[in-house]
Length: 40
Image (cartoon, rainbow, N blue to C red; front, top):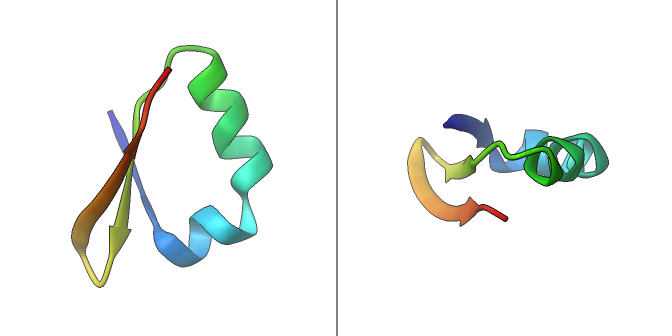
């Protein structure tokens, strides 16, 4: 499971979604706290 800051998610959304398509789980952090989990 990887984490990504919200601003990084916004900047690199296409790459992050590609990682999720390949089975990775991403936790989105805002101010260091988890706010969302992106999974397939």
